[in-house]
Every structure is written in C-alpha cells, then in structure tokens.
Length: 207
Image (cartoon, rainbow, N blue to C red; front, side):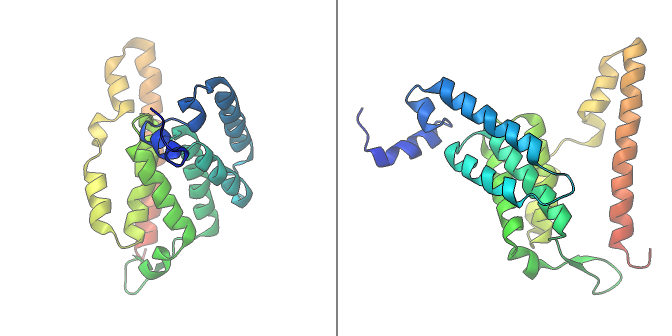
C-alpha cells in the first residue's frame, strides 16, 4: 500500500506503464509522448546523421520505459544509423562474405540496437508490425555478432512466406479488390527479391 519511492520505477515497469500513469496522470503523459513521437518522425533521416535524435529518444525511452512506440522509434533510428555508417563490418576470408564478429560485438550502436529490439519483442503491447520490424533487424544483428544459433532460432519461429499477411489478404478478397491486392503482393515480392539479389551478390566475391 505504501511502497518506498525507490520501488516506484520498478512497479511501473512491471505493469508496463509510466510512473505518471501509475499515479493517474494519463493526460499530460500522453500529450508529452505524442510530442516526442512527432519530433522523432520529423527528424529521423533515412539517409543522414541520426545521432541527435537517437540521444533524444534514449532519454524518452528512460522516461517511458515500457512504451512500444518510443522504443520502436529508437530502434528505427538506430537501424538507419547502422545502415548509413556501415557499422556492420564484413570481410572475404575466402570466396564468401563473413561478418567481422569481433568488431561487430564491440560496436556500441549494434549492441544498443540488439537490446532495443530484444526489449520490443518482450512487450505485450507491441504491434505485429513492430515485432516484425524487430525480428527483421535482430536476425542479421545476431548473425553479425556471432550468435548464429540465436539468429536461426528466431528466424525459424516466424511465419512462412505462404502464410504472410499480403498473400492471405489476396486469398480473403475477390473482384477488383483482389486484383489491387494481388498487384501489391507482386510488388512486395519483387521488392524482397531485389533485397535477396543484393545479399546473394554481396555474399559471393566471384559474383
């Protein structure tokens, strides 16, 4: 009934709420959170330096320790930063590409990205798309840091391509709507085929 004040953050974290929500101050906190998300959406760059917004979102994640939207934004900004900086180091000791595991394990952005995405997967309130994004990033990050079995295990738990949302929506509709969805499915498959081609070419030195 009267917990020590030092226990309040732990209690809030256990129930996946903020400290203010624990005390009933929902309105102000929700407004503050929305302001953070608006700022993040406006400032996260797909091709540019995200250091400043990452620092901002780190502080926000401490303020809202169990908020899936803020954690997702932090993970998204970190993923962009990794892609832009080329943090994931790869070498060609033979014909095929190999991750430089020692370097990658000691990269602070890679370690922080893994932690953010792992936490996102543990939160019950995380949406399917948020968890999907976390998995999509975690699998190669695990592999890049020498955790190949963890990468394989996580990948193996996911839904197969023949049961994905896009394919099932095509089967669930008819008429013009099915035609529109089937075209979007084709575009999605082509997009991922392009990604697959990039990985295939990049993995084999001779190609």
